[in-house]
Image 1 (cartoon, rainbow, N blue to C red):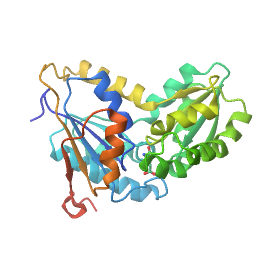
Image 2: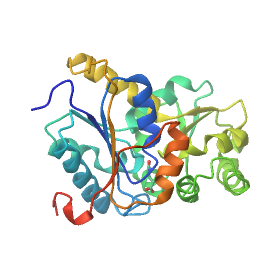
Image 3: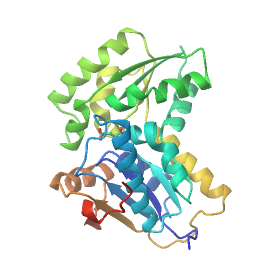
Image 4: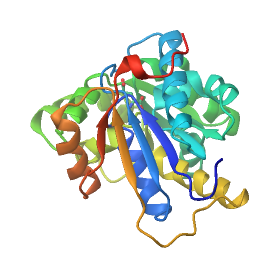
Length: 274
Ligand code: DGL
């Protein structure tokens, strides 16, 4: 039985979803959280939509088995290809990051030229491109996959000469097209924000879809009277399908708090949906 005290569930292919979790912790400070990071099968961004849908259904089934009251797909690649499948399979509300991120970018752009960076899977799905043009047909969207950013983020290279080199390589083509707004369309990318903002400069507004997604979660819980009003300290649990030491090290640095409850879950123990 789910109550307002039940946790919010978030899942991602790895560490990147912590950028969404961070916004949820900030905007919904009383909520308990269960985070699932599929660190054994990261990256999702280079895999086929069918594979990512299968992984996402498993992650969502795991979160439901933990009694969550809301699922946030804190992975752009999974949101792009699996949102509908996960919604259909779930008896709790499910939100993704694409729609909120697209709406925030449309609201932010002044010249109607929006850049989107993401994984190969997200860019090829056209999910952002379609969501933006549905909201504003006069906005043009330039999309660029940045596959190496995921590894750089997993390694914690937030501000690093290597990250800057690849940021220039990936972002200059978009900057030459005069974008004034850039969606960080992969949950790993906000971890690299210091390097990305240096390359983009102050004239480009960076959109972290995690912010608008946490706002949507807040509205949804308020509207359904499921917001946790307890004043006791929230409990944050992290479940990983593999335990890279880096998850804890980079995660603690990024969240600015200790990750006390990190558990390993074996892939074989995940709900079998195949
Ligand atoms: N963090 C995921 C995303 O937001 C993708 C990283 C990956 O697994 O390729 O798209």
